[in-house]
Length: 434
Image (cartoon, rainbow, N blue to C red):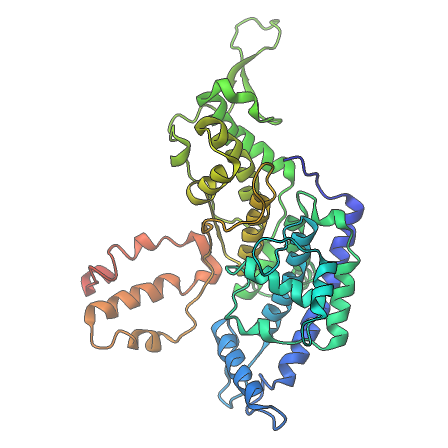
């Protein structure tokens, strides 16, 4: 794949646009939520029955993601504001990524459409503009990212806020959406102001602050160096006859050993990192896990290495190799749900635009998981779900104790240390838990 990194000037434009977009989107989200009385004790008299149902769904969803229901009936909405802003902006942003790569697909599941096509088609839709229609198409293509049951996607921003977001998106150069690392920068810039605010506050870092202050962009050369001297070293050791199918720019070889201090420096054909003899010999058994996958930089880079490897070693087409790599080889875990969405999109986009692949098509389920989901229920409410089943009670207690700090610990949690048996089939006993 010969895609180039984003030009510095365009990168600065992307940074400025995304920072502005977050401010506008959060203002728009807060305004829309207040209009629906989501934070209020009671729904306003101006709400229709449909709006009241929407309000109830949003309040329920807000509590699921961390907003707090006060004793007087009021409810905080900060988590809901952040999620609404993120989902609306990124649905539009991802739609343009797809469109600029000829991958935004019409309702028929086959025909690629441009953003202008979406505006033309929107003329036949009631109350929908081109960007909203493009977002709808993107949602259908990416159901695991933009979940149709998520009530925040049904919120409508005011026309002035919506247009401001559209202007920011339209002003970005087309090249931005075809560079190799644009998606990697997207979330870094989304968190820029939040990260600065948390660092300046000097407050203790909690679950709500952790994602913002720990997002660090890994430069492409760092990713290439690490992968060239691990996966690349394994490949040239096990498939020396095919070592030239990829350019391992950063792969280092061990020097010849000699007692002659004046001898000319010469490299062997043995990689400096070793031959990784403990790794599987079969590509189908090779597993790569990024426990802090962020926006998927390592996952995408690994995909682009493993696909040609499997095509060459196993005689596969590009499509079949991509499917096997996604299903068998690459895995990612991430504390931040927003990052999981970007990582999943980045991997899917690269799979669809891979040379000689057939473009957009349904892909295998991606092995990329959010591990920052906490248990929002009170412990006594959680345990009450077990009823009178003693074994289930202690199983539920083990689950609660194991995952209650998930937003802080994420992939550092090892369930096998506290849950040693199958909850459904073996149950638990007091002795096992204590």
